[in-house]
Image 1 (tube, rainbow, N blue to C red):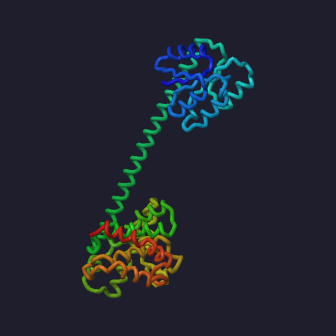
Image 2 (spheres, one colour):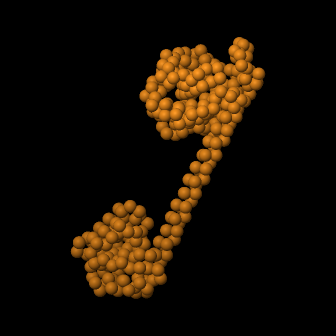
Image 3 (tube, rainbow, N blue to C red):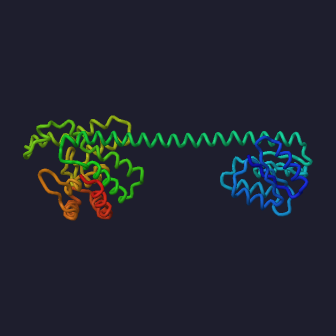
Length: 343
């Protein structure tokens, strides 16, 4: 352990260097000028600093104040050694950040004991710090693993619904990324962006409760069949709403509201305008966009510009105008996402 000794008196330096050298594991580094000692400490990480008070360039009090101002030096043990017996000086040294205080001439046994105890304390502090860092890394690693497991589980749930309707491929991945990008363009923070990216793939989870005869019917649905199909929004909400997870709570809202329309003609509740939660409005744009520019058994993929024009035409009717405007500002990012998550 490195012990810095700063004293302008060569005799004092020699004595203290000798005493420190007798402490197991201690390696003394001596400086006659306080500025040199301070400079060395800026570049290194000592375990103990012993400093004199009366020095020609920077006195001990100023030295301690500057040491404490350096990054990561809050817990560094600082021992002031001086011939000055003024009680006010002792108080000032402790207020400046000195850990302990000794008078000259030092008692060799006491000096050695103080140094040994302070180094032992320093060693314990370092071990606790290292352990805290290890735990922090372990927690971060575990948190990342949980997040990945959560994401994988949510995607599996989303794909379970999507695979019942064999039109989709990577649809849930693309529309999740579109939703995040639109949210960012609207000015929502990273937390919201991350949340909607995880929750958006759950938009059609209610299809798990839609009868196959309707979900997979190759011809146009009747009015009654369409009413049953529309219930996938309610079923999705019912599946997800009871969970405490913020992702599943947002997923429930999205499942319930992503087929609502800005002008109130959507379903299942006929909500209009700002009464539709923003996550539902964002996913409505992302979902329709991806459906248009993707190949389906009943249609070819639209050209991206044609799809954008269709959505722009629907602003104020089907779609929230702010979400449509946001989509236009990030259009190049949308095209990049489409290319990255090809079917």
